Length: 117
Ligand code: HEC
Image (cartoon, rainbow, N blue to C red; front, side, top):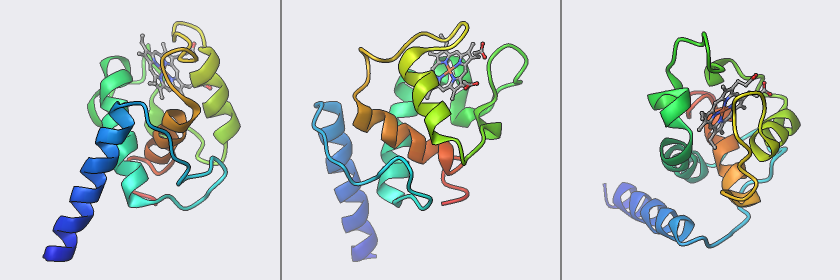
């Protein structure tokens, strides 16, 4: 119980650091296995910057906006490129997000929201 609490406190601290624009490199983009803290922080970031179009918890009809639950989890380069430069009706996030924040988003999307860490 105590350990669990400590873990979520650490996650909250890191989320606060993230909000403040701090950077850290705990996940590498090519990493197949994601850290639970990175997935959590990616989830927070996702709901700040992506959910308004892609849906709460990535749930959307997939008719006009890409269904991120189906994004190929082995194609991190495509993810990074599309988010950084934009695609179709999706704006570029080059100025809005740091590469570290995009890495955290990848931990969230690439793990299917933590279901396949
Ligand atoms: C303004 C609405 C909007 C926002 C905000 C948005 N997206 Fe998108 N996104 C789209 C649309 C529309 C597409 C489909 C683009 C296309 O294929 O023409 C898309 C497609 C994508 C794709 C698939 C691109 C590909 O390679 O086919 C990814 C990955 C993605 N979005 C991730 C994100 C992430 C991560 C965020 C948050 C940082 C985000 N999007 C925010 C509208 C949005």
